[in-house]
Length: 587
Image (cartoon, rainbow, N blue to C red; front, side, top):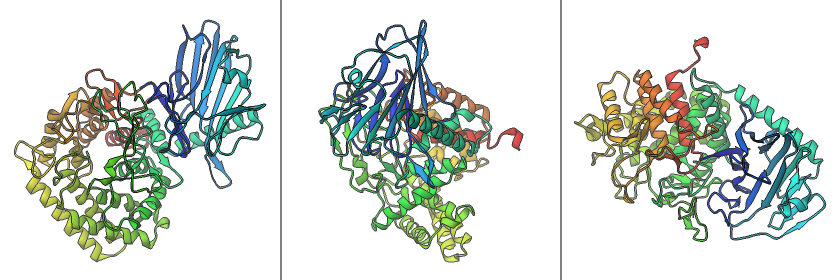
C-alpha cells in the first residue's frame, strides 16, 4: 500500500504517493471520513494536488527527517515542485496544541510547473455532499461544525479544478470547527517549524536498540499517532474494511481500542523510554473498569463506548471493489479472558517503576485486586481467544498464558507495596495457570497447542518464549518454536496466525506480526542469525515510507488488511530489542 500516515494524536490521515488524501476521518479517529476514496473512489470525496498534465512525472515521497511530516516531490524535465503535509502538534501554554487542522504547503522547486488542485469533501461516510460557498480567501462547506479551506490559491481555481502556474509558494489549511483567522503564510510556516521541532525532540528522547534503528523510530512514530490523547485510548489501526485477503469478506473496522493491542503497544513504548502513553491509557482503563463490574470486553470505543454495533455500508464500493465496508465491530460482544492479565501488566509500571510511582492512586491498587479476582474466576473458563474465533468457545492456551502473566505481575506488585496477601494470591494463581498449561496444552509432537482440547498450531504462542513462560534453556522452548514455524510458515519470514477453520472459513494471508513474534522468539533462544534472516525477509514487505499493514499476501508479497497496523510495528520494535538491547558503544 503506497500510503503514508500523518497525524497529531487528535486525528490521522493517509496520503498516497501522489499527494492525494485517501483517508481522513474528522473530528475523531472513529467518525466519518471527510475524504475516503480508499473505500470508494466516487463517493469518498477528493483532496489532491497534482500536475495539470500527469504524464511523465517522477514522484518521490518520504518523511522530513525523523518526523511525522510528509514530503512528496514531483519532477519532470525542467519542472519540479513539492507538497508538504502535516498535522500541527507542539507544546503551547503547558499543554499540547493538536487542532483538527490539516496543513498543506506547495512549493515550486524548479521551472514553473502547472498544477491542478481539487477539494471536494463529503460526510456521513459519503452519504452527504455538503453545500459550499466561496469567500474572498476561503471555501466553506456546510456541516454541523463547519469545514473551511483557507488558502492563498485563487478559490475559483480549486472550485473549478482549473490548471494554474505554480510561480510561488502556496498554503492550504483545512479546518474543522473553528476557522483559521491569523496570517496564513506566517501561521503555516510557524506551525511547520514548531511541529518539526516537536517530533525531532520526541525522537531524541527515544531509547533505541543496536539494530534496525531507523525502522524502530518509524514504528515508534506510528504507534504514537494511534493514541487518541484526549482519553488515552490506543487504536489497532487507522482504517476500516481493508480486506485481510481478496474475496474473503474479512473486512473489519479497526479504529477502536482493543485492550490486548494496547498492552502490546504500551509495552513497546516503555522499551522506547516513553511513559506518558501509559499514564494516559491507565486513566482510560480505570474508567472502563469502573463501568464494567461483570467482565471486561476485548474492545471499546476511543471514549470508552461499550457498544460498537456493526453496520455494513452497502452504498460504498469497498477498497479496490472489495465489499463489505463495515463500521463498528461485533467483537465487543465476545468473551476474551486474556484481557485481565494484559491489563494487569499495563498497570505494573505504576508500582514497579519508581519514575511512574507518583501517578499511582488508591484506585489503581483496587484495580489490581479486581483484575486478579477476575483472573482467578475465569482461569479455566472457555473463551473466543485472541483471534476472535467465531466457533465454539475453548480453553485457549494464549488466555491461560495471559492469566499466568497477570498473576505473576500481581505477585510482584504485592511484594512492591508490602501486601503479602496479594503476593501470595498472585503466586498461587500463577502456579495454577502454569500447571493447566503444562498438563493440558503440551502435545507429544513437541509444541503447545492452541487450546486444551484441540491440537492446532497458534502463532501467538511464540509469546510463551517472548514473555518468559518458557526460558531459553527449557528443552521445550526450541521444540515449540520450531514446530509452530514449520506448521504455520507461509513464505520466507511469513507465518499464518493459524491454518485451521475458524468458524468463518480458511485463512490465506500471512499475519505480519506473527513473523516478528517468530523472529523475537528466535533471538531470545540465542538464534540471532536466524532471527535476522526473518526480520530481513519481513522488511522486504514494508512500503515505500517504512509502514506495515496487518497482513501480507504470501504469494505476491502485497500488503493487505487495515493500515498501518500497530501490532506489526510493535513486533518490529520488540524484535529489535531482543536482538540488540543497546548499541554496542553504550555497553
